[in-house]
Amino acid sequence: MILEIHAMFSFFKKKSPPSEVQSPPVTPAPPVAQPVATTPTSAPLPTLAEPAPAPAARQGWMDRLKTGLRKTGSSITTVFTGTRIDDELYEELETALLVADTGVKATEHLLQDLKRRVKETKATEPSQVKTLLADAITDLLTPLQKPLSIGDHHPTVIMVAGVNGAGKTTSIGKLTKHLADEGLSVLLAAADTFRAAAKEQLAVWATRNTVEIVSQQGGDPAAVSFDAVSAGRARGRDVVLVDTAGRLPTQTHLMEELKKIKRVVQKADGTAPHEVLLVIDGNTGQNALAQVKAFDDTLGLTGLIVTKLDGTAKGGVLCAIAREKPIPVYFIGVGEKLEDLETFNAREFAQALLS
Image (cartoon, rainbow, N blue to C red; front, side, top):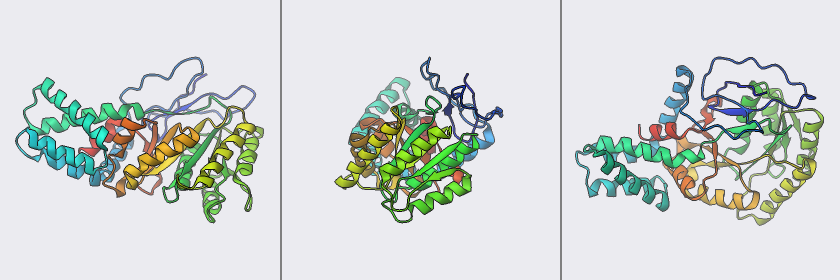
């Protein structure tokens, strides 16, 4: 049976657990965002449609998103303040997109697509071109828009990686909060034994969200992960979140450790990990794309969390990712508060970027 749950997240798929595992009843609430649902094993994912959110909840997010993307979007929107559509406008737009770290391939794609749209619609005003650019960006980013699926496996094991400073552990804490608010039981694995304060930081989130945590003093990250997945299965938890150590793609020994963690998790549960997420810092621009490629080569990523878009003028990197490494972006963050992490929506992002 499919339970539709509405939450702060735009959409989040949750499947009923096996009958032998008792789950607390879930009472549907009025929709506040894109519907949160579950992926049935017998049917494909539904076609994503425009969300029908409760105005107050989603509008509040849109306002924060517009503010967060202001540094990236300001240089792009100034291109459309003139009165003519000519080669100079397209040249200025090309420069603005490159400065926003959209990347050469994505910039070329967007310009070609935009010129086609201008010709087909017979646009005569720069303001019309800006609207058409929003449409082009939306179409480019739409393949990145995908729901996080919870419930096809019990527990759903989510392995989270990222470089130091990207906001990995904080993002795990925020995600834990939202999952717990949905009535899902969460178990945290403190497998980031590389950074001294990581276990303590994760423990704070565990206490705040009233969820369990598996950790070892100076323990092996793979062993901690194995114990957590085994405990999650034994205790009937819905989700096990594995916090791995922050590392750079160039740190070969640490990247090999990531592979080991994944192998050990697979030994604990033959189908796990069910999601492998990478947290990337929007401030790093094109370097974020390089991280995506490197971690995907190592782990086989299933999704991304892009943080700190409010502190950067390089938010165009999502376009580069869409063009060169289209791995789903599950969540984006534009601040430190709990509500500043939300599900990614291509149309919202494009509109906020060019607002």
